[in-house]
Length: 109
Image (cartoon, rainbow, N blue to C red; front, side, top):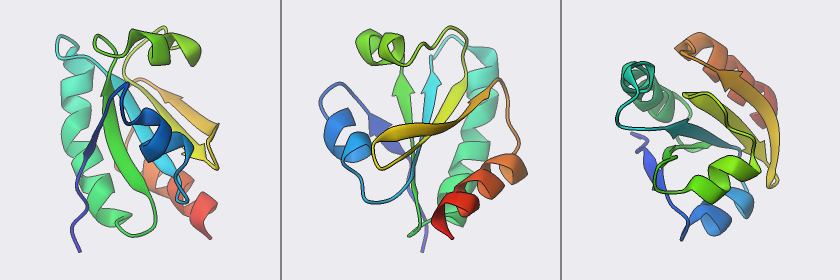
């Protein structure tokens, strides 16, 4: 089963992330950010690897400034893993697939 990246927005953040029964990996990113673009294929791989166990998606900080500010995002890419609506892990900067996969698996065991 292939996992698809979800585009998180102001409109769906509450339902897709905060009310999710599964852990959710949120990539806070922007189109003008080089490392964010480099992170995209890693996220796509992660979505496939954790399909059915966790959600993976991206939140464009330029389009959802209030959400980004509420989680103290000062550098991008920042990835936050949410569980039961709360942020439980944070990665700042380009992060490898193995580190992200391990963090998600620890939350789904």
